[in-house]
Structures are given as structure tokens and as C-alpha cells.
Image 1: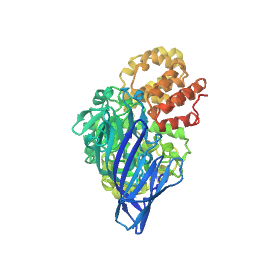
Image 2: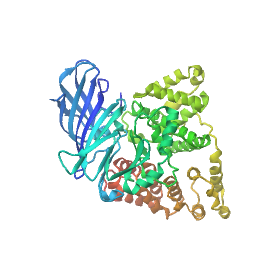
Image 3: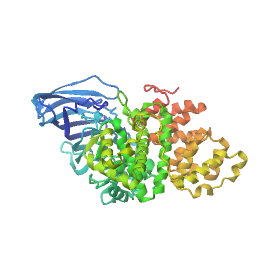
Image 4: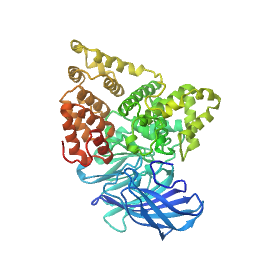
Length: 613
């Protein structure tokens, strides 16, 4: 069973959703009807439970006949079970169409409503959704668990100056027959997918073609920049298909969101969501797109059955993303990225604590909010296990054969760690003795760092290690030996790694970071991965001038990867602790609900507190 869902998945499964959504920006709600086509799995079936969260349910029917419904008690993060009693009995194998008429809440956790001031264009409002992991239930009453997959069709009515897009193929538009000032956009998703991949955006959107099956969507202010940044999309798609098999979703579009989007990317089918912090102007951050493309196979086509098996989505996706890097750049580049990932894993383990069960590859999520469990552990501990197995089984070509076979075996379904492992042992049946020597319990169910650290090729990292060590060991009288040319030969990826290495050391003396700014002029670099590490380094060395810059970056975009650590660094600087809290409280209303909730926990600010300390 899925510990994060109330839905009765052993008794019935949803096969299709038909959505009718009317987006109301004035009240910040969506008025909606959903028809769920449900297949019954047992005889004498007459009741089912759906997940909801903060929904106002108006009526329920089954095959057109009114059905009784009750809302259960509200749970802190699971929401409210919707218990439906059918006016008839069904037997195993039969289908029933359950229709629910309802309205979302202005506080729906899946949705962020932006005022015109919060957009690039400043003239029109904007709406976007983020359903992963368990927020779809605040947008649609459904079996909100990745163990259930369904197709969907949707029609969305929006004001006529706005455009709607969804995680599906576009299927035309027309003037709303009920209101000539509105347009209805239609969408169809013929490939079965879990509820967390339902996604919607409404805004003043434009698009540009960037490939034979790809467009980029954003507000007009970003669209040309985005078309440039993501121009290699088709090359990456082809590289992914060569590795993993045909791309089955038809279209692969990219939508660049406003800055408050909390993640780097989200792999919504047909329409990857991307943070505008990727628009660095140097295409160096395209690994996010390689990652989201890879999810088209691992995550979207083969899906973790519950969030406890999230590493199956993310570990394999990181593995594929780095294999794309190997194809398009080099094996050394893959090794370099893997080393950086190992450091990210160390950071997560340090943050959670080495004994925290949330650092298990397969954690128990009984009574745990999946948002609280989110970290780089499933990504990087998952990757490290797959890389370790690759080494044991005979290298990347051999192991990629297994990954492709795993995708074919479980395509269009959901999978657990046990089923993955069984398939691994079947595929490598001639190497079972080697697989039996793996300490599976230590890898899967033990907190902290993995039992084995892979030996990565350090060629591209050596320059970063040497330069960072030179700074760490430098005395004040040595500072004159640093020159602008030190970093001129480094790629963006290497500069990021140089700063990451320094963040793993004790804080540098203030004289050192001031000298670093003088010779390298890092303040001038707008690449967000470089800037966020540089500002953390400065604040950690207690450079007061960096505090307003760090708080500015923490609030002018909302990607949690940047916002949480930047607030955290300032919060840990005693002199500016109250300033961190004051700035957070002042900006909280404009932040995404998931981001403000987690930053509030980080800064120990009570959720209801509206004034500063």
C-alpha cells in the first residue's frame, strides 16, 4: 500500500480522466468537473475512496446517477479522503464513470497563482502547477498514487488574452461557448501516466520551434533567450533514444516558468517545466534538460510504485543523464559529474544527519510528508549504486543493456525496488555470485553514505582540486600569487566544482575571499550555479557586503536548491540572523507554498507569524 494515499487501489484502478477546468484568476480557484473511468478489481464492489486536499466537492455521480459521498477527517499532509458510495454493485472487470464536480481552494498546494507584478511581463496574471509528489489531489480528486496510471483528456477555459498548456498533446482551441471573452484549450494524453504528472500552466505565453518535435514556451521576455539556451534539445533526445529506446510521448516541449518555480525542472510528459535560472547564456546548465529528457523513460514510462522507491525514478534518471553527457561530451565528463554528485550526497547526509533514516536509499515514509524527505539522496545514492553495479558487471555498455531491458520490462507500469532487483538478478544470471557479494542491506536500508565509494576518474577535477587547495593553504603573504589566468582555462562546470570544493573546507579567511573577488571578479558572473556557491562562500567567511547579495538571490528566484541554502547561510551568521528572518517574512507571501513552508522550517519561523522578530 502507498502510505501517502487514502485511495482504494487494491479494489479499483483509474484508467482514464476527463477534465473540464475553468480557471478563475479573480478568486484564484479552478471550477472543475472530472470524470474518472474506473476499472473494478473485485466482486460486489459498491464504494471507493479518492484523495482530495482542500477541495470543495459539490456533487458526485456514477454512470450518470447521483452517488452519496462523505469527506473524512483532514490529515496534515495527505488531505481528506473522499468516500463515495455507488448506487449499484459492480463485479470484477467492469468499468464505472465516476464524475465529481468541485472547486479548488485558493490555497491549493499544487497551484501557485502569480499576480501580474510577479511575472516578467507585469501585465497578466499567471498560474502554474507542481503536483509531484502528492499535490495532484488539491487540483483533481483522484487516486493520487504513482502505483496507478491512466490516460487523460482535458479542456481548459481561460481569459482570451492568456494561453493554457498541459502535460499532454495540444488538441486545438475554440472560443468558449459560454463566454466569448474566454478561450477553451483542449489536450489529450494517450500514454498512461501517474497523477503526479498532470500539469497545467496559464499565462501570457509565446512559443518558438526549437526542433522537429519541440517548442519552447515562456513569457515573450524570455522566449528568444530560451530558444537559444535549449537549441540542443533534439540532439539530446536522439542521444537518449540511442541509449534507452524510442521516445513514446510524441512532443517534447520545454516551458520556462517564472522565477518562483521551486525546482530546477519537472519532467511533465510532452512539456518539461524548467526554471529560468537555467538561462545562463552559456548552455552549461543543460544537464537539467538532459535529466528531464531521461525521465521520459525512467520515471514517466517506468514509475516508482510509491515514493519510498523514489530512487528508482531518480537514480536511473541521473544514470541516463550522465550517459547522455558521455555520448555528447566524453567519458571523463561523465566521471567529473559523478564526482560532483558524490559531494552533493555528502551535503545531504550532513544536512539530515548520518543516522537519519531519510538518508536510506529506500526510506519508510509511514507518517512522513514526501516534501520533507526530498533531497539529493535518491538521486546520488541511487546513481552511486548503479555505477557500482556497472563496475561489477563489466562497464557502461554492459550495464546500459540492463537499464534498457529494465525499461522494456516495466514500461507503462509501476515498480518496486524488489522487482527491480529481481530483474537485475535475472538479467545478469551468469554473474549472480558477484551480485550476491553486494551488501544490499547497507546500500538500501542503512542511513548515511554508501558502503562503497566508487573510484572516479579525476582528470577534469584535478585542476579544480589543485586551485582550491592552493587557496586553502595560502597565507596572507601568498595572496599576490593568484592571477586572473587561474580560472580562465576552467569551464563553467570546473568553476562550479572549484567553489564546491571550497564549501567542503573550513571557511576561508575574509582576506582570501576579498582577494578572490579582486582577481577573479566572481560577482560579475550571472551563471546561477556559480553565483549561489560564491555567495555562500562569501557569507560563510563573514563578508558583510555579500549578505544583501545573498538575500537578493534567495528572493528574486525561488528554486529551493538555491533559496534554502542561501537563507541558511545568512541565518547561521549570528549578526544577520534576524535580517534573514525579516527578509523571509517580508517575501513569504510571494513565494511558492512548498518553498515558504520549507524555508520557514529551516529558519524556525512559525507558519502563522506575519511580523518579524
